[in-house]
Image (cartoon, rainbow, N blue to C red; front, top):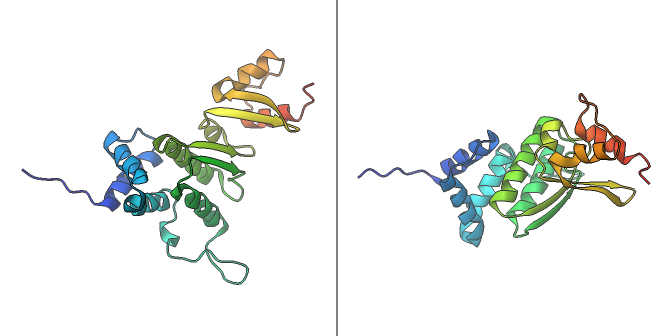
Length: 191
């Protein structure tokens, strides 16, 4: 009987391509990645290579990060490297503050899509703060925590945030970006 052999690199590429297309990934590949994350050292190369490819760092994988004296990777690549470094570890809970600084909206969307997928595949918890994300990026979040002067003014499902503010008298105009509306509402005195 013929046996179909797929190398580790092509498995990573197939899984990565499916995630980038934002389609449902094949259960076999989800299981492959899940097992690799639980194998410890045996699966670390698969996990690391996968994260490098998804974060778009393949071109600079062998380049030094750099510092004030030595030129290295770009600012956007440094940001993605930091995210990748966190995901390769064993942590199950991540707090990321303003991870989109220095990144264009399409790169931010790709990274947030990847982080959302990793949250589900690796059974993680992520709390991510973003300033005025694009609508498609905003829709990737399950829950929203909106703060005003250190107090929570909304915590709940992303799809309910607009209706919540409607019920207390703050209507979001139909052509307005929800993230921009929330930023404006959070600057109002809601006492």
